[in-house]
Image 1: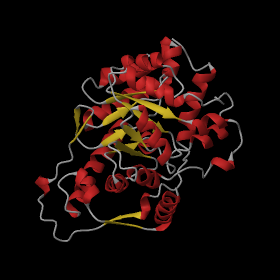
Image 2: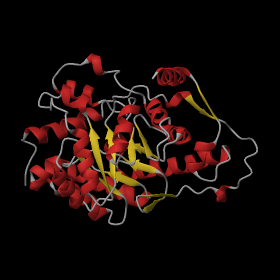
Image 3: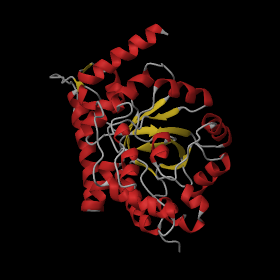
Length: 349
C-alpha cells in the first residue's frame, strides 16, 4: 500500500490540513435578497425538493463537492462522504483522480465511494490538462455519472511544482466531451467562471458549468501556505460566486449552472438558485463538519439544510427550488455594482 511519502501524497494531505484553517472571502451571495411572500398559498406538503439531474433523482439539489482522494489516509474521508451522500440523497464529487491514475495503489481511496453509494450520483474529477484517456480512466474507476474537469490555473501558478503551460485546455475538454458517454462539467476551483470562458466552454460541447467562485476555499492561499508565505496578490482575486452565476446567465445559453464557492447555508444555496443555479455545491463547510464533529453531525447538517430550503421555498411561494429563479429578488452592494459594470462592458463591445 502506498503512503503519503510522495510529493503528490504530501500535497493532498497538506490540502486537507489547510482546508480546515478557513479560506473564505466574499461570495456576493449576501447581496442577494429573496422576497418574503406573506400569502404563499402553499402547504408544507406541497414543497418538493427532489431534482432530476444526470439521469437520477436527488432528494435535494445539493452536491458534496470535490474534496479529496489519493493517500490511504483519505480513504476513510471519502467513504464517510459517500455514506453521507447516500443517506441524505444528494450528489458527491471526488477530488482529482490523477494521483490514482498514476499510482494504482491509491485507487481504493476513490473506488470506496461507489461501494458505499452504489446508486447515487458520483462525479469523477480530472484536470483540464489531462488526456481523454485519463478522463476515461477516471470515469471508469468509480462508474461516474459525470466528469468534473477542473480549471485551476491560479492554483497551479502558486504551487511550486505546478504547471506553467495552459495552452490546449479547450481542445482537451472538447476531446473529453466527444469521447465520453457521461456529461462533462467544467469546474473552476475558487476564482469564478467568467462569461467569456463559459461561452468558449459551451462551444466545446460542455453543457454544465460549475462557478467555483471566489468566496469559498482559496487554493492559491493554501498553496502559498504550503510554501511558508502568503501570496497576497491572489488572496482577493477572482469573481465572486454570485457574479459568476449572473455572468453565465447573461449569455442566455442552455446550460446547467452548479453554484459553488462560499455556500455555507441553505439560504446561500437558495440565493444561488434564485440567480439561476440548478444545483448548489458545498466542499469546505461540509468537510469541516465531518472532520471536527463526525459523520452523524454532517448527516444532521444536510437534513437541516433540506428542511430550511423547504422553509425558504414555502415563504417565497415556490413549490420547488427550481421556481426560485422566477421569483423577484433584490441585488445590492458590490454584486449590484459588478452587474452594472458587466452590462456597461457588454454594451461597449
